[in-house]
Image 1 (spheres, rainbow, N blue to C red):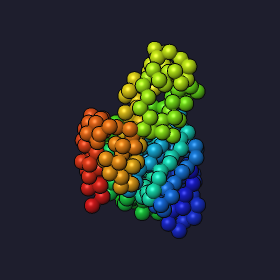
Image 2 (cartoon, rainbow, N blue to C red; image 1 turned 90 degrees about the horizontal axis):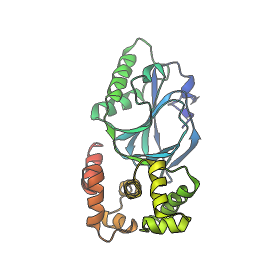
Image 3 (cartoon, rainbow, N blue to C red; image 1 turned 60 degrees about the vertical axis):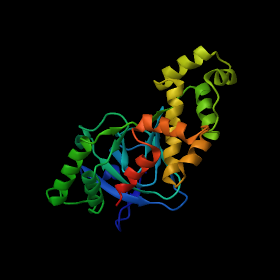
Image 4 (tube, rainbow, N blue to C red; image 1 turned 90 degrees about the vertical axis):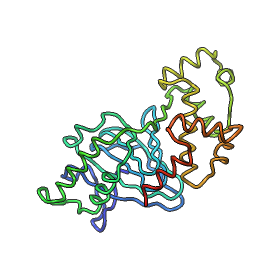
Length: 267
């Protein structure tokens, strides 16, 4: 979000704060949150304490489950959306301090140390002393952030008008199991052309893209308490085992174990 309140300091524009980094926390109600497309001069880290948020930039969605964060480089137009209750933290980093950060959007795993540093910095006054202990902790925070491992939670989004219809169609009906040929017939192109266009637009095959799309929705639903069986059904899988196999292959753990590991980090 572009502007925010920090403690009792009133409305603050992060780009105007003369500090290497600043952080604040946000808690939403059951309706979640939706932030329209905007951008900052500073880089932004959005860390999810509870809930899942999707951050969209040109031609891509980044999924942010609990204990993960998305890094958005400065000057990158982006939007964010979540459903249900959310507790998250934003960290804004000025350009000189962000030199070691990734140059493109990415989802990163947040270690317990990085999390505690972020939460501590969110309690600092906006204009914390430049040469005080607060600045030293901010420096450690930025070093930890630069070293954070990247997660495979990116969903490439097609920008082409026809291909975007497929993305919109799957969003409206996630259980649609239409084949590539069936989708090609729907939009009036050959199967070969559709496969080539999907690869050019997203960098992955149609099948892999749809699996990643399912991962996006599954993380959102699981974080809201949905069962593995219900998620598998809503995504059109004939059995929960088929969904679990796809999920494990993509993220290295079953849905139950993956979410348990994320939620364990909150204790």
